[in-house]
Amino acid sequence: MHVPTRSNIPSRGGSLMRLRGLVRKEFLQVIRDPSSLAIAFVLPVILLLMFGYGVSLDSEHVPIAIVVEKPTADTASLCAELEHSLYFDSIYSSGMPAAKQAMMERRVDAILHLRENFSEQLRRPEGASVQLIVNGVDANTARIVQGYVAGAFGKWLVHYSTDKGQTSVTPVNLEQRIWFNANVQSRNYLVPGVVAVVMTLIGALLTALLMAREWERGTMEALMVTPVSMQEILVGKILPYFILGMGGLALSVLMGVWLFGVPLRGSIAVLIAGSSLFLLTALGMGLLISTVTRVQFVAAQVAIITTYLPAFILSGFIFDIGSMPWPIQWLTHLIPARYYVAILKTSFLAGDVWSVLLPNSAALAVMATVFLGLTRLLSRKCLD
Image (cartoon, rainbow, N blue to C red; front, side, top):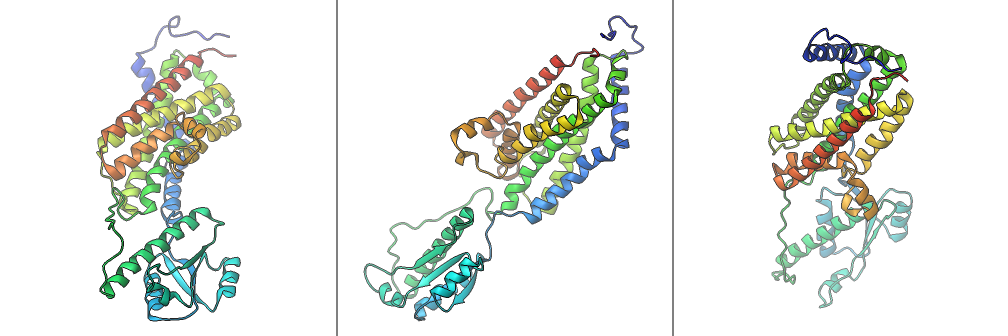
């Protein structure tokens, strides 16, 4: 049954007045529904606290067993280098069998074995050998531990050569400097990514659920028999959740900067502009999902599979896109959160780098246009 449209029903007021009424209705619906406010404001707090305090990609206080077959001044100075490191908790073992047993029981993640002729080997032209055994069950931690031990060993060699009055045999002295995240804190890397996940939840999941609920309850049909146009209905749906999403963004940014100490080096205006484009994209996805499904359960499943999970896994939030297989890398170009995560990390840690911000913003603008356009195309003012 086709519902009369504004063209054949006398208008009771201007478009602006109808739109204001729709927005007011949506705000009242949001206020009366605690779950919407919880998703918009409580969920960001929980996610940021969880990722800010509970999740870390750093490896510190890694338990490492040290086996010294013949203690000497050289082995003592090398072991002291590891003991003074923040990355290791040294545990001296009586021998290799005990150290291997400790690794089997997961009490240590690595074994450093210094043989009895270590000091003698140091004085030979060919140098000394040190055995390092790393638990490879957790491949990421194993690589980090391997790098940490190599770094500590190199640092000790420099001190050893200086103490002996020798010049370093290394032809190149590496002076490394880390840009944008000088302390290499994973929190600075994770918190901006959490903001993208939060905005995805507020934009896509919340909108899809609430619109589908209206279809299930029949209130959408009631809305369609009024003189409002389909454009006014869509704008009336988007505007309150856009404001809600920007509120969630403000809360997330304030927590990231003031609570977790993540630097915000870019412009606030640029951050708001990029977030607005992503939020419009997420809202368009949510509206499109609810328009197609019209059932809350299905809308929730589709929204989680198509928005939340890709934002979590394929956006570069945690996992490096460059290390993924090329088909998956190509697939990530279809994920809006990929572009938003790049904008967030650049704005927070590097500043206004336009060569990064502009292409990613353009991609989000195209996606927002596509999703909102498809939603308008599929949204017809008729009752099935």
